[in-house]
Length: 165
Image (cartoon, rainbow, N blue to C red; front, side, top):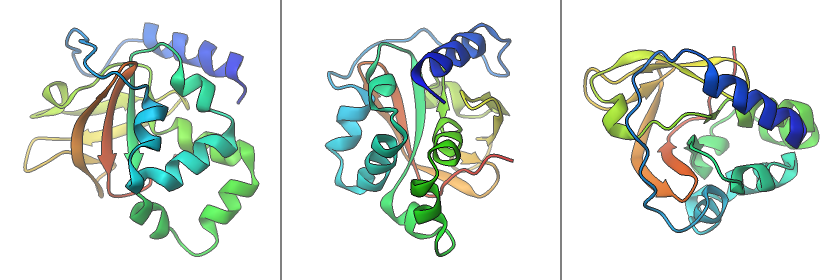
């Protein structure tokens, strides 16, 4: 997905009806999402993937993004060869990475106590269950560090890689 298509998809999903109510966005971080990820050693594999997919400029642009950011351990837990295969296939990699991004702003306060679906830039939805202990995505992926604020959105660090279905 090139930058123009990403922005078009982002605009389309921002205008779509939302499954969850959204709070007003308050910019509190001074770094963009990409700068924040690059400064976080445990997100180096994600940064490598974002660079390989050509999404650095897009995820550094002005926005109200929510990014569910897999840790290095999350990528390492993928079946053998999966990460290398994704890095070799830009379209597949972009599909997986944009599934981790919502064009809407979802801080933890908007997620806690909720169950629903979060629209992604990829075109699918992430299933959310935050009614019990913690925030879980697609049943088996947990948010381990919520609310890492950036100048163009919020990052939630997660313990698994979300694969589109």
